[in-house]
Amino acid sequence: MMTDFKARRQRALDAIHPGVMVLPAAPVAIRNNDVEHDYRQDSDVHYLTGFDEPESVVVLNSVREPHYTLFVRPRDPERETWDGARAGVDGALERFGADAAHPIAALADELPRLLEDVPSLHYRLGLERRFDERVLAALDRVRARAKLGVAWPTRIVEPGAVLHELRLRKSREELELMRRAISITAEGHLEAMAQTKPGMFEYEVEAVLRAVFSRRGAERHAYSPIVGSGPNATVLHYRSNDRQMQAGELLLIDAGCELGYYASDITRTFPVSGSFSKEQREIYEIVLDAQLASIEATRPGATLDEIHAKSVEVIAAGLARLGIIAGPPPEAVEQQRYKPYFMHKTSHYLGMDVHDVGAYFVEGKPRALEPGMVLTVEPGIYIGERAAAPERYRGIGVRIEDDVLVSPEGRIVLSEAIPKSADDVERACRA
Ligand code: GLY
Ligand code: MN
Ligand code: MN
Image (cartoon, rainbow, N blue to C red; front, side):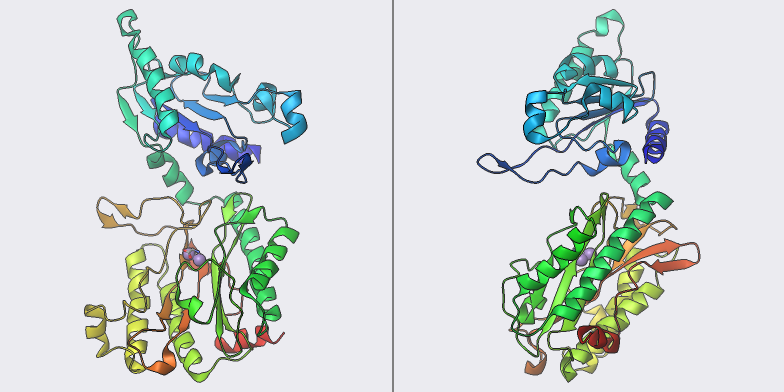
């Protein structure tokens, strides 16, 4: 693993030259009283270092050595007895390949030296206000030495401009982790389809997913899982997962594990009792056709807007055909009549973050996809209980979401192992 982190740092160093980049670790978040939220390192910090301890800071300096400095929590036998081992300064050098390492308490003294005579500082201002103060104090200390001929960074640059471009194009090693995350998530969805029965509570299905993710070594969910039955399937960010499912309803599961800091993000919608009703199947097949059309449109050179437009076209035509919105389809698209039922976009980038980094627009224009980018394709139709649609369609919510790699030839659907056609889904539910 070390090799890839080193190569990433080198690419970052090349891209910031002549510059210095300062990245603080993710802060520890208090949950309540003296209990902390589970710690997860900042994605950029992990991407460059693999160093996952809190209270650390990464400094990359392209101008002179040390090019890679880590500030870390020092070894502390007393604390380590309670909280587990720390790498410490020696570990930062030996195990994480830092050129220099210091205890975090030395930051105020050491950081000014690292900023001296470097024209650009790549630092994300405004995210961690308390850390901003420490960086600005270091800048002040460099400026104070101007009369001695020391130059200070005169530009502060958003580090994402460099790092998020790198993260947008996935390496072979990153894709391997994403494939493994997706295969665990696939097993979770399959097991959920097989085990769901009328009378179960949504949280019992969530427990099925959670058990598969944990059993297969995923560290955590990539986001709060959505397990929405019946009308809850029409609530986009439904999270309570506490309703008892009834026969004849649909269950929408949007869940994905995170493995080795890489997210998966997959949605399937299936009938609780194993067979779609006529109306459910009608809606389901429109969403599926929309998704297949959008997947087909995913290729190098395409934009997310074009991919979205395919889903919009199919969904608007389908809703008009069923009498849920007024036609004709081109006019329904033009006047956005589909929008009360399909109110979100079709795709987002996927990677270390579920809604991954990387610019969606370049010079004001939607960005063209390139091989190595990974995105979701996830159209849906959500007909709320109070919607203006004919009554027989009310309360139906369907989303189908796959994770798709842009390849030189077109695209590879990384999550294709999970059943998707209405018949295959019914079979998986009866397994
Ligand atoms: N699960 C979040 C999303 O689908 O975007
Ligand atoms: Mn999702
Ligand atoms: Mn998604």
